[in-house]
Amino acid sequence: MAQYTCIVCPNSCLITVEEGENGLKITGNQCKRGEAFAKSEHEHPLRMFTSTVKIEGARLPRLSVVTSGEIPKEKLFECQKALNHVVAHAPVSCGDVLVKDFCHTGVDLLASRSMK
Ligand code: SF4
Image (cartoon, rainbow, N blue to C red; front, side, top):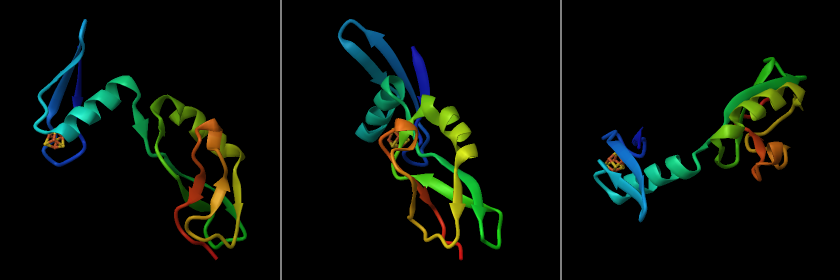
């Protein structure tokens, strides 16, 4: 049995997932979106990844970045470590791709702000 606090809406339902012979039994959710959230959290949790990287030639030393989609939660630490090898060069526009297929996640690492 596992429990997850649903983050899909502000109700924050506490959802219980139990594994049975007939698959997952999901209770505590008030709607179908919560059921889908709990199933995803239980089977393959995903997260958006946000952080900063070094930038050269800009007024500030760090550039905020985000992935173009969600990545497996277990890859977060590897992705954070990989940022030590990423250096952006000004000027950068919001949405610019800094690294394609970031850490083999299938999503790209993007600048999440512009910097001259
Ligand atoms: S289960 Fe539905 S109502 Fe409850 S927090 Fe999730 S989205 Fe909101």
